[in-house]
Figure 1 (tube, helix red, strand yellow):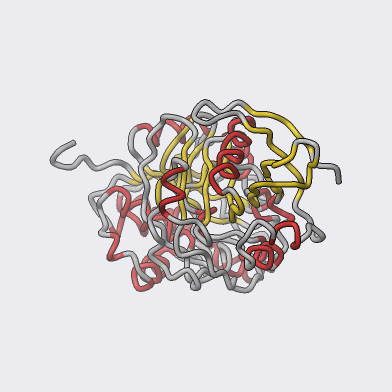
Figure 2: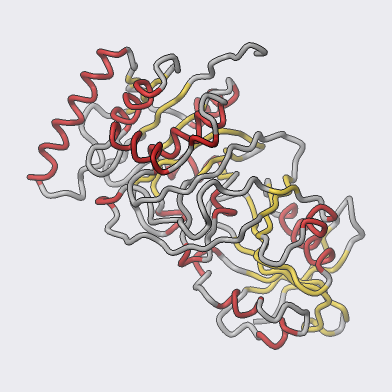
Length: 386
């Protein structure tokens, strides 16, 4: 395919020509190896990244030869999101990264991330990137998605980089929670609740571990998934002084359509019991549709929103999955996703501080064949200095 050449204005750096070309299975390792880091082409081709629109952003050395590059970066991103991720930058690293930043600005994106496979902290700082907090789970412990018996998928085998970096492309400040990846198929709801409390300062990050993950899941589960009312009840029980509201715009059991009738019946009974418990302990169940504007307003009040989404757009399979909404930037909501897809080259760097475009998140949050919206909002508890 013929590379596409253009020039992008970048305020903080000189204007450079930029080449953008799709990254495909036959992208020449020899071409890339000339730029250094002989291990990089092997890593780039080690997984099928095609679901995340991989492409190379390069800086040409000779304007008459589109294949003569002085620097290049492999870039990808989850669909429906508002960021680009640099897997590696090779050759003239600073020029390549500046080209990616210009490329992201051209698309109106909120953020560029950089995986730390070959990036040094010095190079990242020089390019305007800040270090991401290291994940609290070991990078080789990431697991399969979301809702267990709803997915039928095996745990993943991701081994992400030990470090990662981020550069926001706007002046909005986004507070960074700790990152913790779920260690089972089915504990995403519990993990997002724990992350919300750690971000709020209600829970020490040191207490965010597998014991806490499984303990909260055990109180919230509808076997094996966590449905909205049961999750809200479990959060209130774990933190009695924390304001909790469940948002569920249907008055029926949910997340059961994948099961045979005999399996649906007893889980439906448990969901009805969760509603009784919610009434008993004072957890309101709001039956109104939770709009994206309402989510943004809640985040503006320093609340956290545990949001049930479908992974169809971001990962290619339509299963319900809990994410944590914790910040907003122009045009996007910032989430924590406790799961990453190793098979697509996805790592914790993608899943952490992830901006999702407003329209995309609105569509993702209309879940499954049931076409419902479920969420749990956790109120802000003012501290002594608030």
